[in-house]
Each structure stands twice: as C-alpha cells, then as structure tokens.
Length: 164
Image (cartoon, rainbow, N blue to C red; front, side):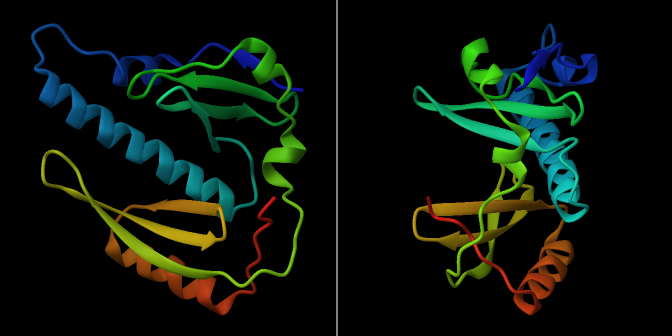
C-alpha cells in the first residue's frame, strides 16, 4: 500500500513557471527536467531498485506522474508535469510496490528499438522501447550512445513482458 508524500522542492520548482518566463521557455525547461527524472528512473530499473522509478498512470486526456521516494515504507510523490494530473489518494493507497516492480513473466518475444524525440528547443532525447502486444516499456536515455549501449545489452538478454 502506497503513501503519498510531499513533492520534493526541486521538483516543484522545475515544474513552476517563473515570473516573466515565456510559456515556450517554461515548456523547454519542464521537458528537460522530466527527461532528467526519466533518466534516473531508467537507472533505477537497471539497478533493480524502485527508488526514483517513475509511475505513469493514464488519466483524463493524459497521464498522472508519480515518483517512488521510498520502497519501505512504499512512498510516492506527485510530479506536476504537463497538465499536472493527479489521481485520487485512494488510487495511490491501492498501489502495491510488488505490482509495479514484480511483473509476472511469460514467454513473449520482444524486440527493442531506439526512438528519437525532438523537443521544442530542437534538442533530442533518446528512448529504448520494448514493445510486445499492448505493452510498451520505455527506457529514457541520456544520448544516442547510451541508447545504443542499452539496446545492445537488451538484445543480448532474454527479455519477456507480461501482456496482461
């Protein structure tokens, strides 16, 4: 059972538009900070640690974003990214760490690939995508070299995804 805790101040600051800051500049700064959080999340996955893992919950016309702050006790904080959607506290309380990090394994072939994203400022981010059926796992990477290294490692590994 998860507990919602206060969002760290550095995260709140990153997702707050500054006085006199244009929306475009704010959006660029927000996207860059989210890319940084996603990189920390992908490192957490590689280390098999839930701390700093980003949880993306479909909500309304987008997603509500949360980050695991602690595994024991299981605590998450809200990330006010984009429209800053939030799910109800009862939904958060219903989250189980085991459901997030211990996916049941079934034998389904998975082929990883790299997706390049161009941000509004023209800079690029790179994701390694694992896709199987209706399930997609995204690993945010710092640069194309990192993405290629992750892709190489994943291609050498035995990967399965539960499509439930």
